[in-house]
Length: 381
Image: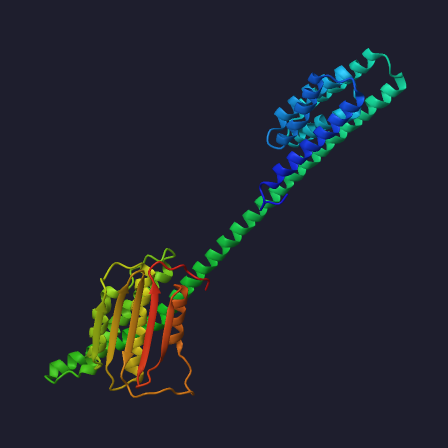
């Protein structure tokens, strides 16, 4: 059975019913002793095969009654048992053994009684005919039983396959959770210690400078602030790694002013423009936009010394556009390869189904432009 074509079994049943009706009708016409009521019985007993899959009990009762009526009146021979055999097979396949015995006894008994009543058939022919019908009935019952067991076996196989798939998914989720916890421990043990030392040393240096009455260098204050922000970022990252629901608090565009102020304190002039009507964004889009701005500004600070930067946030219908540019003097360098920052940007944007352009400007400097759909369809990693 083709599961992609649910109408196919119905078409086959209709063809079977029409073919059975045609064969029995031709036999009734050839015999010449059938009356209109006999044709009606043949028609009803054969056309009921249309529903033998969906209503096997009803089909068996109707076929047995009509064909037994036809057999008792005209004694047409073994072909009259075909509709009964098919519906009997369906009933056994559905698990109804009792009605099988009742239908078999009624039809076989009625056939034998009708043959004895006519007294025109030799005893040996009657015995052979009865044994033949009995063999057909047993074959139909065996075929129905085998089909029922096969269906049960296939159902068990499907259930086992579904259970195995579910088990694999659970194992994969558990391993992913264990890996997240391992990464969180490694980050905590390595980065937290280093960043804490930087923060403490910067704090001590600021304290000593103020105690001595000397001016605290802006770079030292930027280090102190950046180390504190790095600690907060690291805590948020660790919370995300330890929380499988990914509901840990993360930064979004609502924190972009703090990010810009922090970068400005390191000596990078930045102009921020916002177009469109600001609105609440999906969490994954909001997070990706913040990280793209953060990484782009970090790259400008590291590689475009003496430059100024611009950050543009555009709210479009169904889309968020992020563009970060600098006017530095650096140009394309074939010897350089993209770092982890650009790779991470591309991965974030690709996961959300958006587009990213990152490259050098013709007039000098670098630009990063990301177009993020607000209702993304996550792509496979």
